[in-house]
Image (cartoon, rainbow, N blue to C red; front, side):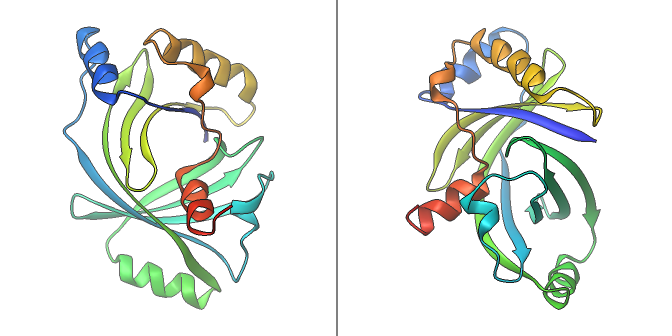
Length: 183
């Protein structure tokens, strides 16, 4: 399955939340997510340049559960082939990844509220060290046109008063890596 999204830096997340609630969107209670992102060996290219084919592995902890996720980049960082599954023993997955030559490179911690808006998944994120963001994502067939889907998503976010000028084209992992390495 292909996940295509847009991400906009939010100047006032409470205002966006109020608009969504006024439009009938039901948002979850805040969810604490703590992610560890792995890359192969000493590779850092995943966070230094956007390139089709890059693979990033993530181990996420939330609500006492753990999810293992793989994203393979397509046309840009917010366009990925994605697979995810719940894991019973995150420490075992961590050890397996180490043995396979993957190393933890980045940690991302955030509080997220999510819901459905016009058939898309919407996320309101407060990301430690990075700030506030609104993400809108669509799961599509692998053959979808990412530019067309991202345009559709932007138009939906603009209906909430958000502006493309605040677009963030990098994933949270890339932003965090670049912040920590002063890129």
